[in-house]
Amino acid sequence: MVISVASPLLIGIYENGKLIEEIKREGKTSEILPVLFEDILRRYDLSSLFYAKGPGSFMAIKISYIFLKTLSIIRDIPLLAADAFHFNENSPIKAVGKLYFVKENGIIRTKKSEYKDLKEFSLPEILDREIFESDFEPLYILPAV
Image (cartoon, rainbow, N blue to C red; front, side):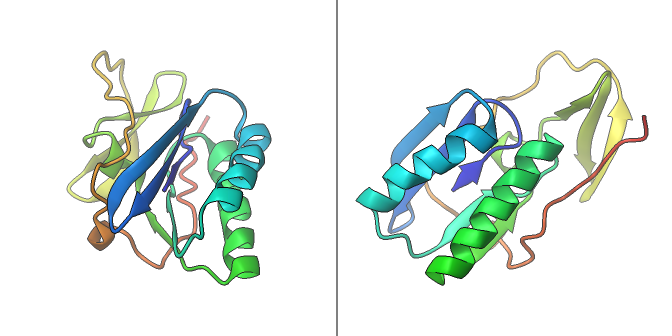
């Protein structure tokens, strides 16, 4: 499970649906994701890939998608995705300036505000496969600037 929509980057390794290892790193997704997966692929035999497809950092989402989709093709591993609101208690997600992504009544949009109590992203202890779908294309929701 990869959550790269905000810093720090989170990766969870699951066995039988239970979190067995959590990796948390600050830095650019383009620099740390390949290094982390080099180690992960050496230590684990992955059977599925899961990621938070957005919204959030446009470049981090894009890089994660390309990296994970490539890995999915090369290793013949299914790739599944869920929106990032599942991993921060449906809290607003920083977009740009005073704009935040919000999910209200199942619809994701941007909203101008200054939220004070944003929830951090976290990996679930138990991976709920029901929230993931095979529509793994990123949520590139770009606010008007």
